[in-house]
Image (cartoon, rainbow, N blue to C red; front, side):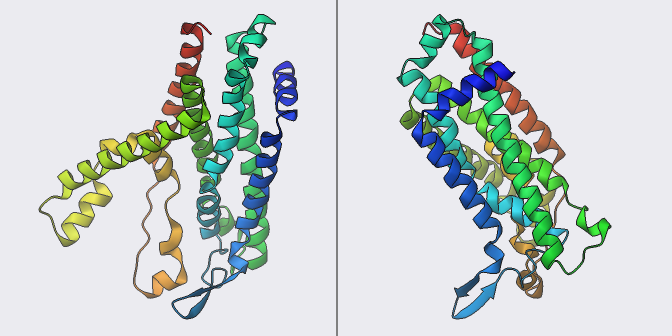
Length: 281
């Protein structure tokens, strides 16, 4: 493991975009966690997310993980550039000539992904606790840790997303093609989800339609991006403003989506390894 870490360290140490994007990502991540302290002008009024309950326990776990998860594509850039430059600069071929096996190559990339995911998760965990204890209306232990599972969901979400990008990077080898393929897949998955939803609720109205949307099983919800998205739902319904308007927040732990993400991660890793083994580089 130490050997693989050293290899990755020396490769990325001399790759300037890797260092710049890494520093920018973690700087923006930390800044986003403090977004609730800023006043926003909206519809002629001022809104402060802290006053709306963004930092209250247990809701804060949902808010912070959802907000910083929006940055995952930014960190994904680092992963994609790091892998694609190995092929564009013929570093992979040279490394294999020097004795680096395909198993070690995949292992080194998984270590990089895991380290990035773990560091990001630890930062979110630490700052969430700090902000919660400083600004939450309650700091009782039961409420503090009631929804801490969102931190675990955040880790799984990031790891699955980065595994997906690693697979696309090894498959296509050029960063431009990777992001184009990801964008096309995102559209296709969105269309499939919309079609299945339309088929389920076609002809229904009101409460019946809402019940189907909340309780029925949707096959497309087990697709990669939908599974990741379901791990951390949009928390805006939990704002005090939303509660005053009578909007309700309902959340059932997405066990199926968690399992789907773990399965997809394994598929992406194994598929990446299979491509490396089968192709003549």
